[in-house]
Image 1 (cartoon, rainbow, N blue to C red):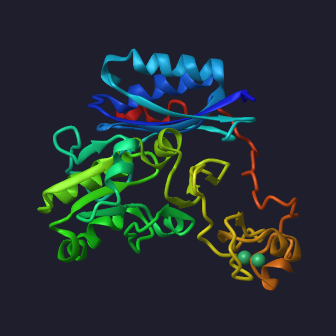
Image 2 (cartoon, helix red, strand yellow):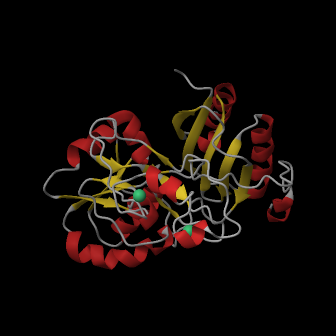
Length: 319
Ligand SMILES: [Zn+2]
Ligand SMILES: [Zn+2]
């Protein structure tokens, strides 16, 4: 059955001359459409994920697609029964994805974009290495079979790992992937800059691969940055790769520890979830501030005093 809401995921590298002014106008437009989510505006482009009714999301996409600055922008579209976010944030930042690669402009040079079906065909070739450029908490819950993963907690650490990758894979075809494709724009460009010669990137990331290639050979779930926490992408040969934090049995049920001080974000199986009432340990279970468990392990952020119009003009100085 068709669901009432859509969740949009997108990014676009483009020169935004006055991010402050762009942000202000964009924020108002989003509020008019009752969209919710997170959008980053930077001199190098736009990156966002929002939810809204189908009608409003279509209007939003149409508006962005008709903006000459954003020519060629693409959306990954998912369905949802409800809003996937509580609030609407539109912020100005230096980069649309926090990296330590500010000097790189993917509009000038980046890895060759592979469509999901082409990525699928190429990924098992002998001279190919599939490289996950995401962080530990993301690839621990799901990744491509045989992918090389990096021990990083943040994408900013990516460049530190490249020396090591050079010694092992410099002569291979490197296929990078991430959630929606945005990190790969810079990661693949950086690999080229570092002397790798055959660098490709999965266009649209895991999300588009799930839609267009059935998610074949993607094990586990894909971590996302909205209330859903993780989504299924593999409808062909799915497999659970993560283990319950408490009992070590296979589980991909992501839970936030009910103790707000701990708030650890880990897989906890159904059984242990009830046993520990949504906490990650006996200690957290008896914490005086532990939140009541409703079987989901998800806690909406407090809406106390949220005013969608607050902060609307705060970036004025930047313009
Ligand atoms: Zn368990
Ligand atoms: Zn805990």
